[in-house]
Length: 583
Image (cartoon, rainbow, N blue to C red; front, top):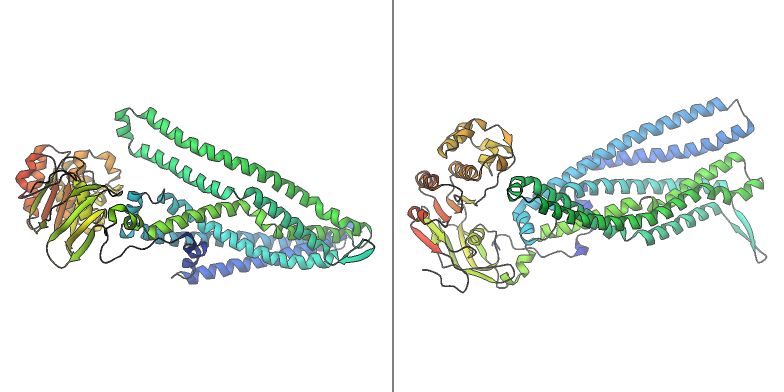
């Protein structure tokens, strides 16, 4: 459907939905003051931690020198300094983590509200499901946004802290280790700050090796997130349709289906294990060697008497810190893999939400412009040259020109599969595939009642008043609507919460949908087999109610029962394309 008020947006290529375009909006949003305030506080805490680490490194040298010299006099003072430093580091660590969690959740909360608005706005959620543009949007909004906010914040702050730590300890290590004098081919060579260069080469070599072995994990992790979500969704479907499955005795089939989906999880997980094993070997080797490596490199100058044992301990500590800083990529590789996979899923979701008209605009069924919906300032609904098609362009049915005036009653008939329900979707603006135009009154209240109406989980009153809020109608109005539609057993249960699609029978659900109609009083009412689960007497009663309570409303019914013809003055026969259409 291409409404004249909102033309379809072109699909954005991958490079247009960057990681930065996902990160930036929150930091320039209406919450920017709180966000930046928390971020600056967290950064200040991180810098204070780096300063304390420098102080601890200095203490380390003094402590081991005191032990070597058996200096009893300085020992209590050094232990007091140690206590102060460690206590301060603990306080900063706790509050730094607390504030980081607070900022991460606020970011996630803001992103969730924004993504929900985009997903549920302008019918994007329906088009994404109808055209299968993205899998598991629920997971992307719930899990991926949480992971994105938390990991982005953690990686960014850790990287900043690492850079500051690196600068601080490179200076210390450069001064402590001094220069290395070597002779190559009879030529003396002086390497200033040689321990810094050794740490850098050690870390960069490890980073290169880790990336070479681990980069396939990005796509594998992306796939793992997808198959896990598919498996969870399948289990939810079993829970939601437990009764139908039990009636069909379909447990074996569902078990086999779930097993097949889980097999995909298993196969992909073996790939995760394969690459994780390789990484674990390299990371473990790298970490263990890093313990002894600085002592081996610094020992010649120590044994030559260039510095004391305390300085050697400082060098080891500084080398470890510098090496860890240079190894940020290695240490964060797992988080980076998860973060990249999450970003890819959110980029894909962002593109399809923004451009959910894409499939409509390029489909063979819309090659001539598709079905155009125009809102006009008149009290009538009309079609002109309307033809319905499948998304692949296959003609479905040709609809003769009709005009639906206020108070008119139309019965839509035709064999199954001819396109009756598709016509309802087109009139609702949900089906763009085909050609022609629909003119709809701009201010008219329209209500479409499918064969199985949506029943939200919550109070009965909320289910009855849907899509309006429960506060829109008084309890007395709701009770009267329930009694009128022969739902007397539910009159006293308005405030009861439950899964009403499971609690109520199909016939009761259709009567509840009729009660919704009586509450909302639409100007145009479209009923798509909305009374098929009712007996003839209850069906006739509801149509009498609609006629009496909604005398000025236009009613369009899709039905197979001939008995409903008595409640309609006009008839629209719908036939499959290529078959004769009745006048």
